[in-house]
Amino acid sequence: MVIKKPRIVIIGAGMAGLAAANKLYKCAASKELFELLVVEGGTRIGGRVNTSEFCGDRVELGATWIHGIGGSPVHQIAQEINSLESEKPWECMDSLTDEPVTISEGGLILNPSFVEPINDLFNKLMDFAQGKSKSSEDGISKNNQISFSEFFAEFLNAGGKGSLESLSLGSFLRKGLEAYLDTKKEEKDEAFQSNWNSKSLESAIFSMLENIQREYTSADDLNKLDFIAESEYRMFPGEEITIAKGYISIIESLASVLPEGVIQLGRKVSRIEWQPADVQTTSGMENGNNGYVSRPVKLQFVDGTSISADHLIVTVSLGVLKHGVCQDSCLFSPALPNCKIQAISRLGFGVVNKLFLQLNSNKNFPFLQMVFHQQDSMIPWWIKKTASLSPIYNKSNVLLSWFAGEEALALEMLSDEEVLNGVSETISNLLPNSQSHCNGTVSSDQFLNKEVKFGKVLKSKWGTDPLFFGSYSYVAVGSSGDDLDTMAEPLPLPKSVVNKNVCPLQILFAGEATHRTHYSTTHGAYFSGIREANRLLQHYKCSNDI
Image 1 (spheres, rainbow, N blue to C red):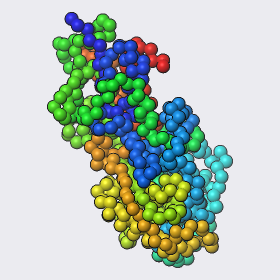
Image 2: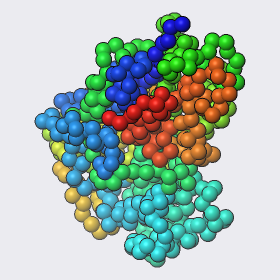
Image 3: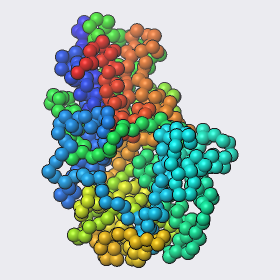
């Protein structure tokens, strides 16, 4: 009987898939210990990494930031391949050193002294939610109205149960704002233009900060975001930076070690057949040389072709899994275990899109923060939860806005003309008066009170792309970090295999939605790919030191 080398197939040529392939090839495939294949449904590698160019500048349609340089594997790779410097301009190359100009609907320029206390409160709330503030005894500084410890005690009591366990992050933040407003020593109710008063303006500024957090987390509504999970999320220390030569340079570096033919593009999987631990089969596996005669996993592709594998690493997005598992698309046959299906169903997977606009002038557009009324107005609804519009670097004529949730999906459906008209209408509403609030004068550049015209449009479309169905994961209310761990469990586990004719570790799962503390990030995806590669290397007793 001919002994075959084990065949490992990876679905997806994004960060997780290529990290796994890179590790496996360097450790074992190069020694011909097993066959390796990466199948990608799209026409490019990178997955949710998609570096592009717009009006002469390098931009990122997908992953943008290295979230902390201390200990980040992405930063380490970028350093090794000299990808952090470039002669060509790139997105956020100078981290936008200009101070933001905050303007409310109706053209009211807000003095930083009015905005900063709200921003300070919000940041302290987020620090507490993410576990950065240990207790009120740690010397938390006071803002102008109330100490954080006083505020926290008040809003917690207002919650009724004296417990955070039932709170979403959204309700945590809102209770904090209510306590903040209720305990201010002096309440200014003077009437401002456009029906603003002090309290409504503070609430609108807080909403702007919430909308920024929606972009960070991908949650359509922060009331859907689990509070406890935020304390488990981890970031690397150090500054957050973008990659001069583009995020795609990291992807290309990982792929560069793989021989030609290992990565196959345009190979979209339609069905995955596997053998659970309790399935009886007569085609067994050989015990010698770690080689299997039968290949228990079969992949069907949309073009009608198929391939068999001993082990399959699935790195598709949580959005694809939700579509293929929770919407009766029958991606897996037999179906995944119920615990896995429930974890996929409970976890959140949101949409975040980026809109790039060409500014048709030589004016220096500022880093603009936008504060909107919540009631009806002339401004299009799909813009009213957009927090900012800013150049991608100082003095660039390419502007960027971020969209999340329902508004991000709406953006995908709009024509370029509709986008340009909506943004132009918004800017004209924000800029006409240029008045300042709180007895201060705000420097807002000479573009204010002048006509602003836009040219070309470039936008991402992650929500409707069938290869992704969204952008990145979050832990939704009703879910927990345990669901992220469940996502990472392979099938079947070796300890569950009692039938010697059933191969363990047939299906392994990687991707950012399988990492408990680094979900939603490229480095989380990278770590998950390395984790599953190591799992297989350990299974075959291969050294993984590279």
